[in-house]
Structure formats: C-alpha cells, structure tokens
Image 1 (tube, rainbow, N blue to C red):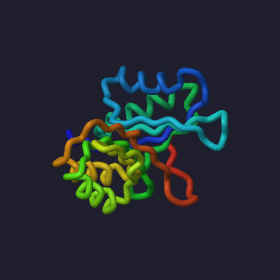
Image 2 (tube, helix red, strand yellow):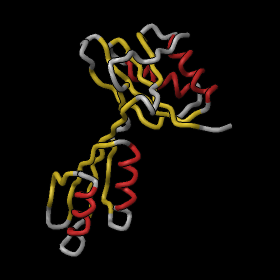
Image 3 (cartoon, rainbow, N blue to C red):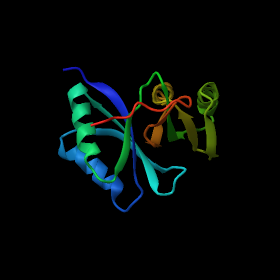
Length: 169
C-alpha cells in the first residue's frame, strides 16, 4: 500500500470549534495530520482550512466522504500539486557567533531568507516557500547548532482563475 502526500482545502462555516471538529474527525478515523492551517477568506462567514496528510487513495476517499457529511463544510477541494501553489513559513533560531555567522548568512542569502533578529550569540531567520524549499534550507543548516524552530504548516491555493476540482460525495 503506497502512501502519498495529499493536500485538501476545505471551506467551512466560520464558527466556534470548527477546527477541532474537522481535526477530530480525521483523528477518529485513525489518520495522522501532517499539517493544518486555518485562515479567513474574503467572506467573513467562511474559513479556509488546509490539511496536509499522508495516505492512500482509499484513505483520502474516506476522509473526503466523512467530511462532506458535516453540516459546517461548504466545499472540499483536493489540491493537485501540478495546478496549485503551496507555501509554508519557517522561523528558526540558530546559535551564531563570530566564527559561524558569515557562513550562516551565506546560506540565508542563497535561500532568500531574512534575518529578523540578531544578538551576540544567536539569530532568528524567517523563510517562506514551498515545503521542499524549507526542508532543503533546514538540511543546509544541519551542521550548525539549531536552538529551536517552528513551521506554520502548508497552505495552498489553486493556480489561475479556473475553478477547483470540487469533491462531490
């Protein structure tokens, strides 16, 4: 059984506890969420929830079918990686002193990241990009001492004006 990464975008009613209801539905079915983000849309009554998870075709179909049954769910879309743009934000704190600061700055420049805080012994770096870019950046920094980091999780949107392929139960 081959697992593949899937990203789905769900438009839901903007109401109390909606994110909890969506995530618990997935958890109760025994699936693990890799990333989850929720954000406002142009309509204040609607929230967009973007979920990334690993699964097979059967697990994806099961999640979509169960989610479509929730009264708070307005629309569900599977985001095709070839027709969508995915982004993630990384904040990473690195131990940095005179001996390694220059080398870290070179990596920051190559990845077009930003140093948003600098002290004598550390720096905080911000990077926005596709999840693969974030992974590559972190791999390049492996040989330096990472103090801590946080990632927002993937968010995505379909390219162009064409409508998404909407999931229909």
